[in-house]
Structures are given as C-alpha cells and as structure tokens.
Image 1 (cartoon, helix red, strand yellow):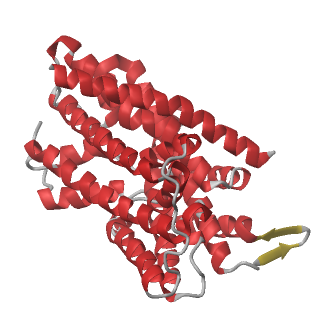
Image 2: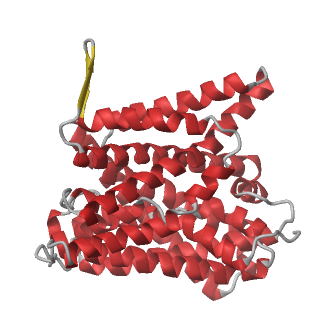
Length: 397
C-alpha cells in the first residue's frame, strides 16, 4: 500500500479525536452501575479494543486495495461481509447522531429549565424544545458536501474532553461540590451489562482506523499510535469516572454534567464545552450515511444538489423523531455499545482476521486472545442488549 502523508503526531491526534467522544460524560454513571471493581472492566475493554484495532491493520496489510472497513469485510467474506460491516457502521453512526441531539436537549434544559415556545396550538418545552432548536442549527451544516472546515473544528474534541474533566475537577475541589457523595459499592452484578455497554461505547473508533492507517506515512507505526491513543483516552475516561463517582456516588445521572450545579462557572464551562462538541461532529457522523443513500439515488435516477439537501434534511428530521421518542441518553448509548459497538469493535475485526489469515496461521497467543475477545463480546452483546432494551421499554411504559 502506498505511503500516506500523515505524520505520526497528526495521526495520533486524529486517533484521539476518534476515541474522545460523548461517552466521557457517561463513564461516571457506568461506574456507579457496575461499582468500583468495574474499573477493571474498563481496562479490559480498552485492551480488547486496542488489540482488535491492530487486527484491522493486519487485515489491511493483506491487500493493497483495502481502504475502508467495509473493504475489509468484503475481502474476508465477500459481498455479504461488506454488507454486514456497512450495516453495523451506519446503524452505529445513526444512533450516535441521535444521541448527540438527546445530549444537547438534556444539557440545554439544565441551563434554561423553564423554556417554552408556543406556535398556535403547538407547544414545545424543555428537552423537546431544545432538541428541535439544535436540529434547526445543525441541519445547514449537513448540507455542505465538503466538510473540511467541520473536520478541523471537530479535532478540538481532544482538547474539549480534557477541558470537561478539568472543569468537573474544579467544581469538586474549588467550587464547593466536594466528594461528599463518595460511591462505596464495590461491585453491582446487575449493573454490569449497562456498565460494559457504556465502556465499549467509549471505544467505538474502529470505523475510522482504516482511514488513519491509509493516511500514515509510516504504516509500521500503527500499533504504537493505537497504544498511545488508547492509553491516553483510558486515563481520561478513568479520571472522569472516578471523579464523578466520588462526587455523586449512586446519585449520578446519565451524564455527569446534569449533576453539576448550573450556577457555578466551572459547571457552565463543562456544559458549554459539552454542547459545542456534538454540534461540530453531527455533520461528520451523518455524512457517510447520507453519501451512501445519495449514491443509491444517483445510480437509480440521478442526484443533484437539491436531492442531496433533501436527503440530509430528512436524515436530521428522522434523528429528531427518534431523539424525541427515546430521550434516554445512557440507555440508548448502552444499547449502541452492547449491540453495535461490540460488533464493530470486537466481533467483526476478529472474524475478518481469522477468515483472511486462517486459524492454522495463528499462534497460540493470538488464538487465545481472539477467543477471549469473542467470548467477552458475545456475552456483552447478549446481556447488555437485553438489559438496555428492558430499561428503554420500562422508561417508555
């Protein structure tokens, strides 16, 4: 495969951006669900996802024509593999975009709790109002065919994640929140499926890894890049989890920003930083879905700028509908982690690697590692998906 133009440092920054997402806000809640000992599972999930990331790199080395994650699926299992990988990727991206809207609605409602707008017989208030308003702001950004500017803006996500953690620490140490809520639960078995789903959701960067690999000018450094990215992100996630659980204990809400006192400066910094990140990333997340739909339409009847705008607007409207119907951020993200991220980040990389290289060529260590990852992934997929669905159904009843 020809060398790319991306330096090691730039690729590391892009990798950190891929792994630094809204999952940061829910890791304290995940820790409160699983208890202190579930921090070991955070490390285990990070290690497993790092390893499967290296497997994707090996798969790309097998064929110079491979450029994307669906290409790996096609190389391993033919057209059906490409279809399965694409389906998991697009479903994950769609629900992450929906989660962005829910997150924005929750946090804006905390800042402006009494907001209400009436238009004739239609009245919108609270979270629902803000989900709609944010969608109106976001929609024009999705119409851009070239997202270079948004890509640069979204790169600030790495620094935004650090700012959020520091703001939460400031709220505890300086602004008087303290650590009085200190969680004491060592292990909560019933909460482990939710905790694992949310932990896995934090490491859902695998669809981006092939692109990063392709862009590197020294592809032999892919493993070192992944080590740095996963290590730094895990330290950040772990720090946020411990901070939040020490501050609010079992009283943690789905996003730690919802627990912070809204009047404090540190809280406002954390919340506003949280709000900016999804707005800048929403268009980047839905663009692959929109591009796939537009490609289908173009092949059938042709597609101009008007069709592109219509497709992207309808995508935004559909995510608004889902966000209003299922406004449960932590449960939805746990479902994404358990059902979709497990497939994208654990099961599919292992399956593709084994299919491409064959079981006989693997060492005992590789076989053992892949076997354990597959077992963990299947366990989380079954228990986590069931637990998340039951919680969502319970909330809707």
